[in-house]
Each structure stands twice: as structure tokens, then as C-alpha cells.
Image (tube, rainbow, N blue to C red; front, side, top):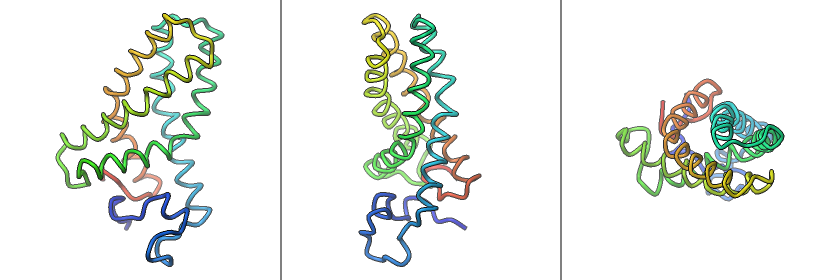
Length: 172
């Protein structure tokens, strides 16, 4: 059975091999790609439909929308594991773990969601050439979605961790 993620070495520690107990904490290349694939895929599966709806609501042109979702899917996949590492750091900062209250878990996931969505939304909208009005609309809706979906996404990550045999962070 997997140990809770808050008792596991950090992904970055495992990658660098800088933990005290090298034998138990080193991560194989296969494990690294498993984390990367699971969290990247979870990000794309969860957020692509939501971000598409936001961009439709912000009245983006169809060409901009297609380009944005293509770039967004790639960025989402590539940053999925980084999101989880950030989530783990926020969980530590707030003292949250598997046994924490739902409120504490919600705070962690909301903060992580908003912190991740701000730069993502701005950079992506700029990259696809969205107008200033489209950028402001998408940014406002993106922040609202980051805050509103933080906890649901956290629970979704918990399911993905369980199904894929990864150690849980906040949800069993």
C-alpha cells in the first residue's frame, strides 16, 4: 500500500537524489514518467472543457480558440506535475494532510488553483493574440475558475492518484 504523499520525499528530491536515504527515495525514470504522465493527463482532462467554455464566453475568434486550446493542452500536460509539486508545498505551508479538515484542503486547493491560473491565463491569451477585452474577460473568468475548481480538481487528482497507484496528498 502506498504511503501518503506528505510522508514521501518530494518529487524534486527524488529526481535530484538529495534525500538522506538514497536507497528508499531515488525515483526511477519509469516512476518519473508515470508521475509526469498521470498529472499531465489529469490536468488536460479536467481543465480543457472548462477553459474551452471560458474562452467561448470571452468571445474569442474560432481560430484563436483552436490555437489557445492546442497550446493550452500542451502547456497543461507539461505543467501537470509542477502543479502537484506546488500543491504539495501549499499543503505543507497550511499544515494540510490526508487527515485534515475539508476546509483546510479547500484552502490549499483554492490557493494552488488561483496561483496556477493567473500566469497561465495571461501568457496563453497573449500568445494567441487575443484582444485586450478578450484577455480581461478570460483572465477574470480564469481566476474564478481557478478558485472555483481548485477543490474539485484536488479531489480529481486524488482519484487519479488512487487509480494509477500514486501516493495520495490530500484525498484517499
